[in-house]
Length: 167
Image 1 (cartoon, rainbow, N blue to C red):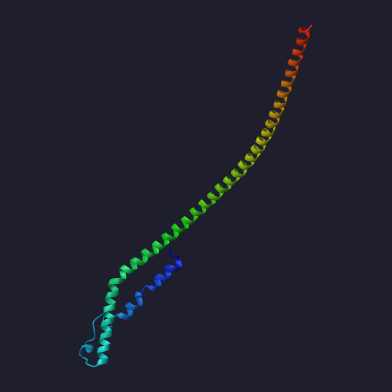
Image 2: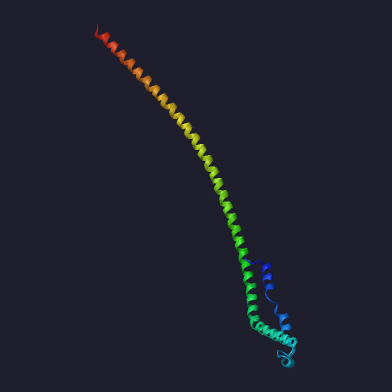
């Protein structure tokens, strides 16, 4: 993404056409001097070559300048849109981050609550297991006592029958 300071650097790197246009134009509106054509010295030929180069560069610049200006304006618009989209995306990311953090906090509180419930249920189950164990032990004792009482009663009855039958 280009930031606003980057557009200025991009635009500054593009050639500035106004000062070059003024330098490139000859004093006779683009027509070479007549004297330059008739001179034969190397200095005059250098001047004539430089005038021709200036005129050529001015012509190329006149052809290339309108599309470059159009591209510059499109770049400015594009960078502006990119900055707006970047800001919007940053806001959405922040919203998502906040909602994710809130959801995570809710989940953590649920985990804590469920852990407490689990611990409570575990303690209750251990208590029930201990009571069941004691009740089974007691039931076994009661069954054993009843069995002994029944055996005593049976023995007593057999003893009485033997006493009654033996008379």
